Amino acid sequence: MADLDDRRIVLGVTGGVAAYKAAELTRLLVKAGAAVDVVMTEAAGHFVAPTTFQALSGRPVASGLWDSGPRGMAHIDLSRGADAVLVAPATADFIAKLAHGFADDLLSTLCLARDCPLLVAPAMNRQMWENPATRRNAAQLGADGIVILGPASGEQACGEVGEGRMLEAAELCEELVAFLQPRILAGRRVLLTAGPTFEALDPVRGITNSSSGRMGFALARACREAGAVVTLVAGPVALPTPRGVVRKDVVSALDMRREVMAAVDGHDIFIGVAAVADYRPVESRPHKIKKGSGNMTLELAANPDILAEVAARPVRPFCVGFAAESQNLDEYAQGKRQAKRLPLVVGNLVQHGLGGETNQVCLYDDHGVHPVPPGDKLSVARAIVTHIAGMLS
Ligand code: CTP
Image 1 (spheres, rainbow, N blue to C red):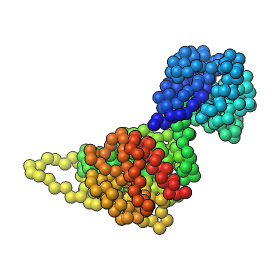
Image 2: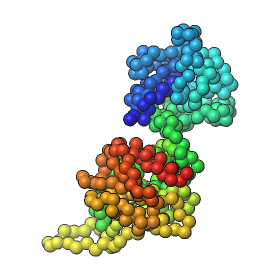
Image 3: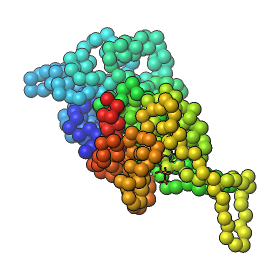
Image 4: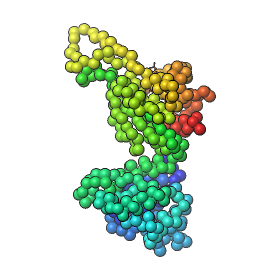
């Protein structure tokens, strides 16, 4: 199932140069399964033609207050039954209108008449964004329960650099998907580990494993979508940080342990997803090891078990472990749960190594084994989060 299946989104486009990004946003929302009704202001039409949005959404585009709908009440008809109205880009002028409740065109009227959540993505020159009038208006939107997404900082169309750029289409799509998830971890603080660790042998070599970090990153995203404050301690991986997640990058198991122990106080949930190396070379050589004539023996020292250490603290968070096994999954997963005194272990069979796009897991708790429907890692992550939230409630 796609993230926005069975959802209807009204996408409002106002007159800023970032309107071109709204075309890509329309495509991404449709790709995610949403029915998208685009409503443009007259000024938006100076930047992108309605035909573009009509082609991308496969639905008629509305803009005039007087020319739309069988009942002539587009401002009501469009918002009823919608899951959200997202205005992207939202100009300073449109934000001012919303703050004051003006309704002099179709988009501002439907925003006023809506019975669903409203999200806005500001896009304007940095001075306009910093102007006290805009700040006042934006604060008013916040007070009115309107969600403000961004703006980002960076290079602007006018050539200046600063805060005011609209978020990228992919970021807005991710924010909207997150907004529509149930807030089942609201008020919780979650700490996770993810990825492999790298145990250096010398400046260019080391011991690691094939963990991609995707499952841990998907879980971090799912926890944040569920309303949690999330910190992610990540081993060496090439993945973008999920939006709204605080990320700390580490290399070795000892680094990971240090970061986790420094952060763990005050967290309600700890999820150890990382494939932490159980051993590290006793000695990491300062210079490249030279080839000898015969075999070579490496001496390895045991790494601390981060999850077991967190779970053994007198005041401990709700601890979740992962068990990736190549055989005897039930036995090993339950064994790890008992040995590390964990309320929950997520187990999966890895026959072809770590790091795929999809996953098939079982959840092990006091009540037994709960298989999760196989799927992409984000949907599996959401199912794990639902189970955790159920255990905590
Ligand atoms: N883990 C950890 N620190 C370690 C080793 C493991 O925090 N040094 C955590 C992992 O993040 C995972 C769980 O413990 O949540 C189980 O890890 P796994 O590598 O599957 O098992 P081990 O306990 O290391 O046992 P074995 O390697 O023998 O299967």
